[in-house]
Structure formats: C-alpha cells, structure tokens
Image (cartoon, rainbow, N blue to C red; front, side, top):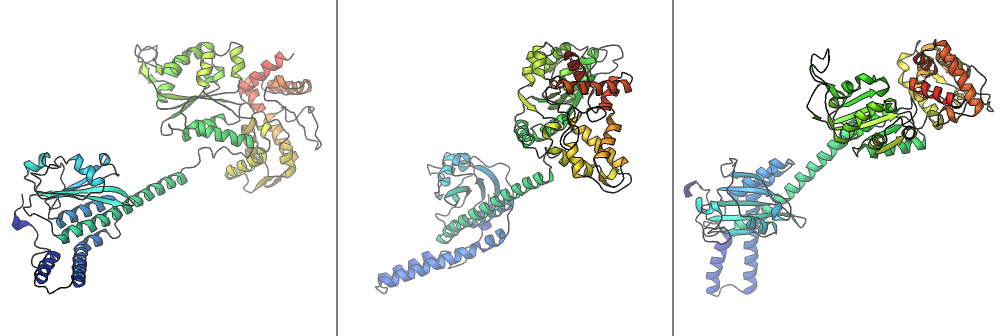
Length: 566
C-alpha cells in the first residue's frame, strides 16, 4: 500500500488545494465584519465557481489531448481509467462497459495507479454498480463503516477508505461506470477534484461512444468489402427470363434453410451449377461440396461408394476409406440423377437420410455424419414413386425443398444472352483470333430449336463456332452446319421438320413431359433422329447420346417413352 508521501501533491490553486473553500472561508470572515453586500457575495461566489471550473478543466487538459483523435476503444478505456485514478488520488480502479442496466455491466479493464494491469479485482458490489449505472455519482470516505461497502471483501482485506463510482452517460443512457478506491485517510475530495471528475465523466462517455461508433463503422465496412469481394453465389447462372429469375430468388431463400433440396430438370439445364450456388449461399459454405452422378453407381459397389469400408472389409481392402457421406461431413452432398439408383440402393440411402448414421463395409461401428443433401434428377420422381421405381419414403425425405429448372426451349429469351455470354467466356480459345457474333437471323433461328442437351449443347455450339468459324458474323447456315456436324441427325436438322414457322426455320416443339408428350409427327421426327444417332454409334447409347447432345439417361428415357408411344 502506498504511503501518504507517495501520493501526488496538492492540485494547482490556493495553498489549501481548494480555491472555492478558501474563498468561502475569507468571505465568511468578511461577511461577519459586515463588509460584503448580498449581490456582491453572489458575484464573488460565481467567480469562485468559475475559477474552480477553470482549474478543473486545466486538470483535464492532458486527458482531452490524449483522447483527441483516438478511436480505438481499448486505448480510450485505458486512457480514461488512468486519468480517473490519478485525478481521484486513488490506488486502483476498474472501468465497466455495458448499458443502462447494471446487471449487464462487464469489466473492460482494471489497473493500479502505477499503470499496471490487474488480472483480478476483488469483488465489487453489484448494487453499487447498478446505482452508478442509474446515473448516481457514488462516493464514500469511510468504506469500512458505510453500509454500501462494508460487505465488500476488498474493503476490510485492503483497508479501503475512499470508494467512488462514476457513471459515464451519453444521450440519456449509461455507457459504463468507472470504479476506483484507495486507503486515503482524507475526509473529502476537494470541490475542484469532484468537478473535474464530473467533467471527466462527460468527456469519457463521449470518447467511448465515438470509439464504439467507429468500431461499428469499421465492422460494417469490413462486411461490405467482403460482400463486394465475394461474387454473387448465383451470378454464374446467366438469365433474363422472369421465371428463371424467380427460381433463383427462391433458391437463395432455400439456401439459408439448411434443409435437403430436390432439383428437377432435364439434362444440361444447369442443375449442378444451381446446387453449387445453393452451397455457396448456405450456412455450410465453408464445408465441403461433394458431387457424384448416381447413374454411375454399380449396384454391388454402392455401399462402399456411399459409406466407405473398413480395413479388411472385403478382398483388396488393405486400408480404410471414407465414403461420400463421410467426405461431405458438415457440408453438402450433391447426388445427381438420383432417380437412376436401384430400389435396393435407395433403401441403403434412406437410413442415412433418416438417422445421419453410416456403417462402413466390414465395420461393426456406426459413424455419425452431418450432411445436407442436394439431389437432382431428370426423371419425374413422383411418377417414379407411383410406378414403384422410387421409394416414397426417400422421395419425401429429400423433397423438403423442391426446385424445377425449366428447359432452355421454355425460356428461349435467354438464348441470345447465353450465346453472347459463352462467346465472351471462351473468346480466348478462338482459332484464329478475332470476334465472332451471331447475326439476328441466327439468334432468331436458334430460339426456335428444341435444344436437347439444353444449355450444355448451346455452350458446345458456341465453342465450335469459335474454333471452326472465321472471325465475323455467324449466320443461320453456319449455325445449322455446326449443329449437323455436332449432333448428326437430331431434332435440330436432317429430317423433315415437324413444323415450319414463318421464317422457314424448323420448330420442333418439345414438351417438358418428355418424348411421350410430343405430337405424333414430332414423335416420329424424334424417332428418326434417335435411330440415326444409334446407327452412327453402332448401337452404343453413350455415343448416340453424345451425338444428340444429351445425357445418356435422357436418351434412355426417350427410348422408353418412344416404345410406350407405339
């Protein structure tokens, strides 16, 4: 404990250290002698008050200079506390920050008069803090006998005499409280010190409020910069179609819900890109995104693929391996073409979807996984359920949120926009270098086509144009020739068109229900093109699908539906 000799000397002013008290004493003597009139006495009192205020402000000058331009809250708190301890001739102090409810106050910093940070401060009465937070300047000079303080452990343990709590208020609310104490034997603080502490409270509250506002501005700027630096998760899905824009708005809302999602749509419409956007916009954005096409799942290897295996789980399993669900833990698992899974494999998935538990092949231990599933399919799963090819329980588990992506032919207004986008995207691959552009007639022609393979086929067409067409305008004949070379005999060209529009362009109007929803003439046209693709690929369905610009699953669906239409 510091001795009296260690304490700072008297404040500037009269020999007694309190100019107002000295003046009142002299006025008392003069008044007793009958030498001062009432108005003159009031004037002298006002002058003394002004002098005390001026000296208090002088005492606070170092504080105002230290706080000038300081917007760091930690630094501001440290400066305020140090000046308050020195000004009050206290031994130690603490600054609490919070709101107007004392129970919400939390210690921000505790230091002693030497500027050393105190790791622990003996318990401070919550009642005292609450009273100060309510706006009361609390001060006692004999804490040992004061009912408010005598129960505090530190008062008796450290022989505390002077205790003060100073509220820091701004705009009608308490921002914090400064607490300080010490073993000083004095019976009172001078009027100058009291006034200086009251002024300090106002200056400190304003400085804390400014620092907090500055901190909030910095945080807001940081968030804005992050938003600017982070591209729109759905920005890669180029569209001007009103229905598609509404779909993206719905997908953005769904992304935040963290439920399973089912995406329906034909091959090539962008189901995987939509799944990627949902993942980036969702709460699992920092987790993994694991994607797999269920059409490529051999029935006898499904468990190993989905759930992994333990060492020795089967012949050749020399070391353990995690499955898709373990790799996607705390992230998203995108299961494309989930409608292609067999009923047996669907049943194996159902337990994981229900319980979040996988058991690797050859293991007797269950593993808990936390995975959001985004499933996609070009099949009508509700119809597959009715036909017995899809488990109803699995369908309803993964169909918590449902999105239907329209085929390109149903949003033909996007075709010119996408064509321009792909020309710019792949411009670097142009051979020879130079600008290519589609003529208005070519774009109008492209808008009449049914686009099997959808956006994927359009992008491939653009890449062929950049690679094979000379710089300049690309008209209808060039588009038709590239499509013929790309797809062979497909619904684009090669056979008698199902309908001739006013422009003379073929217009095969496919419907979202698939080949079975074509008119008889349209079905026959599609049958011719599919047969030709199979002939050119020697019956290989993968090769035929490549010629048609569609997924193999789409070709298989066409074949089933065409057979059913006979």
